[in-house]
Image: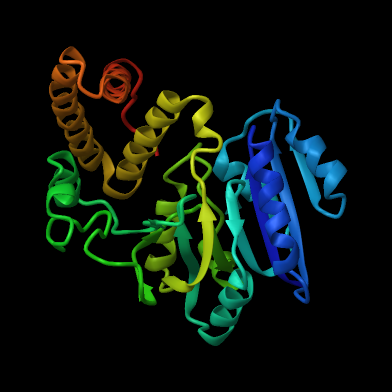
Length: 314
């Protein structure tokens, strides 16, 4: 058994993927490890680039885009590490990040999932800890109360905007862009739920680890850069709809039909308000391009809610 297995799922993000692998070279020196890249039928030469430049990496080529959860599960099933690290292709690992995460996991056997501090490309903090969804914190997001009063726990609870990500902390959920998972905990909790195509699987997984008595912990003394949107930039509105679809699936799975219906209504309110807000900005030529995109995004989301969403999916 290796100490660490790193699973990287990639879809049309070749340049980011190669940067990610390059950043791991010095980080894995002296650590018994393996890297498994699962390519979801990329058309940009990602798989060939890995094969040519990193022949030591185990490369799995899917013949179609199987989604994030299923592709990760394929990689996990091929892995042998005591710890399994799920890492997005648009991550660049900073100095000593891997070593510090493993040392902390070794010293704290109750932790099932550990996440590092993630930074934006410009070095600013990227929020990677979340509270599990509730009716209250969802309505705070709808009314932008978490943006207006970001320092208050009452209104900023969903995105934890009241907290500086500057201390070790047990949290309810971590961003799935970079997670280290204990194999023992994984064996108890199970794989990612493949009912989630992309988005939502990390939230669901963290909830399941927490429900199983395992710690879900944020560790700020290990850092990585997460550029974000490496794959979703190819079709931002489509991916935005997928994100909301995943949210509805989460509510159905954990709160049943009443929860799903409640969140459906919350989404209707959210995007109706956004349309009413962005439409005047477009007409007034104020920040037209950005407002027009957000207006179109909300319109397409509402169109999908009324024509494409089927209740009862989990």
